[in-house]
Every structure is written in C-alpha cells, then in structure tokens.
Image 1 (cartoon, one colour):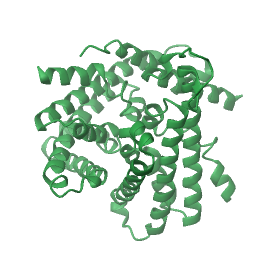
Image 2 (cartoon, rainbow over the protein chains, first blue to last red):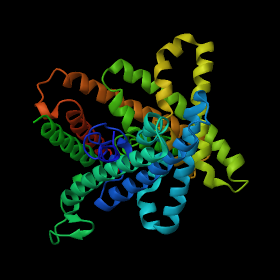
Image 3 (cartoon, one colour):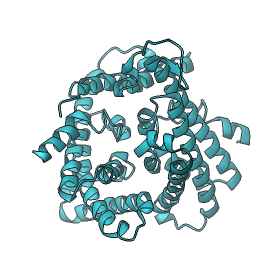
Length: 194
Length: 190
C-alpha cells in the first residue's frame, strides 16, 4: 500500500465513524456545533498520531502478552498531555468538551489503530495512518456537528443565518444526535451501494 | 431522600447512554438479543460499582494527598483494566456459572467509556464514598435499562421491512433517537 492511499483510506473507504462505526460516544456527545465537533476530532487526531508514533517506535520492546496494557498507558499519557494543553490554551473548548477529553483513552479507534496498524508497521506509515484516520474522524465529526448546528440553531461556526429564529432545538439535544447520525449513515450507505 | 434523587436522576433523567452518550459502543454493539444484553448489563453493573469504589479510594488516599491529580486518567484506566482482569480470574475460580454468564463481556468492558466516565464523574460531582457507590450502581441499572429496551426493539426491527439504505445501523440509530426522545420526558423530574 502506498502512502497516499494509506492516508486517504480514513476519509471515505474506512472512515472510522461512518463506515467502521467506532468511537460513537464522542461522535454523538460533542457534536452540538461544528466547532465543537472539529475540536474533538482534532484532539483525537493528535492523540492518534502521537500514540501511533510512540507505539511503532517501541513495538519491538514490548512483550506480546502485556502489549494491550502498555498501549493503554502510552495512549493515556498522550491524552493527559492533550487535556493539559487544551485546558491551558483553549479553556473555552476544554469546558465544552469536558468529560470527553479524558475519555479519548477508551475511544476504540485509538486502541484499534495501535493494535491493528502501529504494532505491525514502520514509524512513517504509522504516522500517516494515524493522521489519515484522525482527519477522517475529524471530517465525520465536522459534518455531523455542522448538520446539527445548521438544523438545531440556524447557524454555522457560530455565524447565524436565519435571523432571530432559533432553529429546531431538537437537533442540539440528545435525540437529534442519534437521528442526524442515523440519516447521514443511511445516505452514505445508499450512495456506496449505488 | 438524597440517595433517592441520585438514583432517579441517574436512571431516568440523565440516563448515561441516552442523555450523556457514555457507553454508546456496547449499546449499539451488543443489543441484538435480549439475553446477551442482560448478560452485558450484569457485567457492567458489577465492574462499574467496583471500579468506582476503587478509583474513588485511589483519588482520595493517593492522588489528592500527593497533589498528583493530573495522573487521574492514566491511573484510572490502569486500575480499571487490572480490575477487569482480576474479576475475570476470580470469577472463573469462585463461580464458574457466573463466569459463564458474564465471561465473554468482561474484556469488552475495559473499553466501555461508561465505566471510566462514571469514575471521573463522581469526582467532578464531589460525591462521598457512599453516594459514589449508589451513583455507580444506579448508572449501571440505567445503562441496563436502556440496553434491554433497545435490544427488545431491535429484535422486532429485524423482522420489519426496512428500506435498503436504512438497513442495520441507520435504522437502529433512528430507533435510539426515538428512545432518547422518550427518556427526555423525564427532564425536570428532579
């Protein structure tokens, strides 16, 4: 597999959210607006790249039996770094994402890529894989976040376009997340089969 | 009374899956049959309660006194992973029948964000040990309630004539949306 297809597979063909259906909790929980979704996606992408990088560097040093706990410790360290960085530089976003930042640790995508890709491949291709998957995840969260923000508050990236009207609050609340994601996946499924 | 409010709000008002979006992966993953969802619920209540008690004590006795609360994420996830392994080993020896019922679900729980989420939430909410334990049990029950209802709906859904693009996950998500809407009816109860 060349680097380019390794990079682009995360966007459409193996998109973690729309196709693999991994990492549903942050996908549904943080996408109340486009900017929150994008922030969460990029935080996860950073964790993916860093954990893939470190794991592919130390993959030969870790005994096979304890590899999963070792991967989790590496991922948790990177997540702690992200948590502290966000709290320091983007406190507003940190406040919005709240609990979902420490929960990146248990996001199946991160451990999934560590186990399925970084523990078997070279450093460079692991970084590219992490970047592609991470940006694919961000892309999915951005689409879902934008959909919910447009329908739910009549705005995009905080810029209101329908005057004083407030949009359908339903899409900002919990059920709207399930509904919007369900229909987006349905659209993608029927496009892929067509 | 205090505990009653914690229980009702954890199970119905801010249901962990349908209102807080924690544990959505197992919610969508193991909800094909009612029997498996009941097994998963048992395992989650068990591990969630145990993990919350242990992480609460670790936070109170180690992390806070030594002023190293920034290590929360790392220590909690390690404790949960170790705990799940330990429970699996002990259960195998002590109660093979219970192990048979819960065994397959135990490894899945390490990456169930509801467990880590509840452990972090009780610290955020400033609960004491007793309140944390009650909160963990109630959240486990809330998770189970949502999961079992959803599994029941999906068993019926399998026999329905669903449009081609909506088959599988999309129609399950739309069903979850309606279920979440039903749970929103509890808003403002406490």
